[in-house]
Image (cartoon, rainbow, N blue to C red; front, top):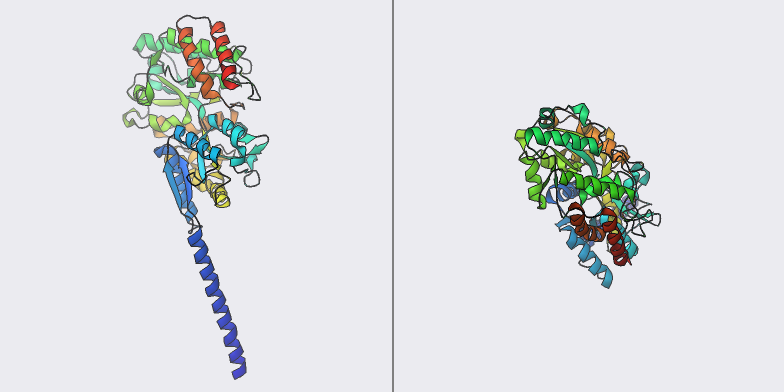
Length: 429
């Protein structure tokens, strides 16, 4: 019996020692585990989203601490390029948010710096127009995040005062939109929309609605001079200005002030602007949402487009690559409860195909007259034409902006676009 208890004691002691050693090993490894660092912009949207994601992740991964650092978009691109060029990764993040217009150039130059995510995420669960942007040579690198679905917000009271109804704001062409705008201007003295001379976002919205961009389908060549969708977009833009239907503004603050102070009847922008519209609580009940107008002459043009949007990326040459990938997968990638919460907290419009089943997306909004604005957002998101933004969106727009002033003043569109084509080709090559 004594011998039996002696043997039992040895076994128990061994088990306890093993547990102690295992605990010790775990503690050491937890101490050695680096924090995950995330770079993003916009405190009220992206930063808030990733901080909520970090809180959610910590419930099951208590040994991982996630540091979120706010940086402006240009600074992020500059620091990434500088770090990649000299292969110095210490001061770079583990996870970074990159705008959809920027990612193709980075992937073209530095694909080896980003972690492929095809084995981690099921990309068939996301809208194609978004997944294509995150891919290079058939390999996906990004975790799709927010929809940039372009929609038409309008003041119901202004539209009705001009003699129109909600039904008149559905399935619009740009010609019909401007017809309504002329009546709004005549009867109320209010502009229909804002335009910013240094921001061609409206041109982008119009052009993508016809499945076209500043570059060809492969993204390798400038597509300016012989681009019918671009020509028609510019012609419509010019008409808005020359018909005195557009209110010129400069900068973000003046843009938001215009609709918050009632100086314009509509806002054509990304669905993400809804939260900014809602900041003016005294306007509750006055606003509605519809699909954007479409081009009439451009082939295949529809009442759906996109403006902005971004995705999350993992840097491949940091130490905690797999942890970073797992964090994105378990939060903004596949955590339906979190995404539903973000729909409520920041008006996130998910690009997951099953987003219509999220409880928050089924609710009506008192501010928008007890209508369900997410119905319009999600329908638009599902229909956004798939295009290749290529590498040079902003470079081409810098060239086009100068010519736009000539066009608005009466310059020949064909001649101006020919010059843009020539300069864009020099810039690209």
